[in-house]
Length: 144
Image 1 (tube, rainbow, N blue to C red):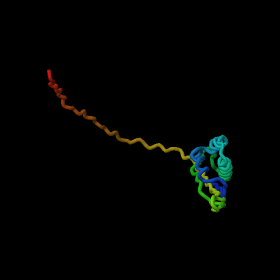
Image 2: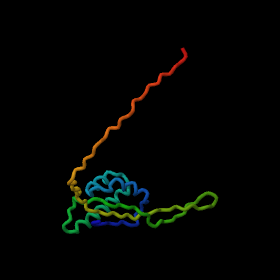
Image 3: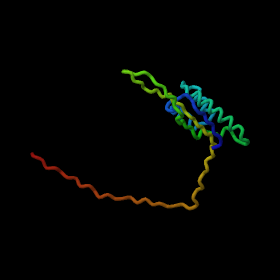
């Protein structure tokens, strides 16, 4: 983890926010901002602000290449609920839960892939052909 940013007590349910997570997880932050600009969900606006905040945190680190960053972790956890009551039939009351979210975003460096060294010795593998016995054809005798 290079840097992280948290956003707490958002008035968007975690379930609605989790619809956005697969769209941008593992992507470059600049590409993720472009994707979020085209999404017509309220949670996308909060995610875009959080991503810009994480990028600003990463810029404070000296010697960091911004093009090598990617979104390594994006989690939407539930926060406290506002509990309200609504009138129901026969004098009852039903509860309305207005949910909030805590969002955590982490940026990490994209490490270059290390190539495995080639083996020094060659392994010779011989393939043997399996001979199958000839198939005998049976002739059915029918009524003539």
